[in-house]
Picture (cartoon, helix red, strand yellow):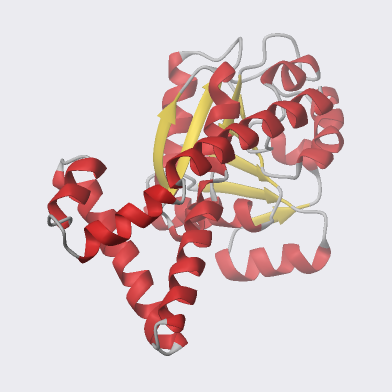
Amino acid sequence: MTRIAVIGGGRIGEALIAGLLESGRLAKDLVVVETRRERSHQIADRFRVRVTDDLADAAVGADLLVIAVKPADVEAVLAPLGKAEVGSDRDQVLLSLAAGVPTARLEGRLPAGFPVVRVMPNTPMLVGQGMSVIAPGRYARPQHLELVTEVLAAVGKVVTVAETQMDAVTAVSGSGPAYFFLVVEAMVEAGVGLGLTRDVATELVVQTMVGSAALLDGSGQTAAELRAAVTSPAGTTAAAVRELERGGLRSAFLEALYAAKQRSAEQGASVE
């Protein structure tokens, strides 16, 4: 039986808890660490799991420790973990969902040789469709990555990369939902401008996005191939695509993702 301690009962922590319990594959023994009393009651009532404010008690004996707090709160978690008897009786592993915090920083505040895996999730994990990208720390072994992958698969897909690629990952998938929502906003506004009601425009755009993503995921074709299939010569789609290209859509995305990557690197440097 895998015992999992989720440290932090915020939105991301709650999403992971919900996914684990719904999957039924893991977390038969699950404990949540939450210091806010009102929030701890909410988590306990909704999921019927043990919730405690005693971090050391929850951590000792857990196979997987999940840090699901904001980067600014990581130090407050690491300090008691470093003093607790973690890593002494089991092959434990720490999974950090704290954006921008390097594995070296986590390892430096834990007992020597403690396995750490860093993950960049994204918000669709709230509906079980997340994209989680993991990067192993210095002491993480294949069995640790296997456990982490199985846990995160409960809330979406999982990919493994080198930690040096995490800033690029942040720019593409970590921040990616915001780009998607911005495109949706723009299309809805355009639909309203063309005379549709906002409700109708929203339904058209959202279902088009959902259906297009499903088609791309399941067809085995590339985005370029699927776009070409919709774009008849001299047709309406061709006219629209021509305007998007004229407006610099591709270069705008390139510059945007580059800016996000640079900002991620800056934030990571500031927390080391």
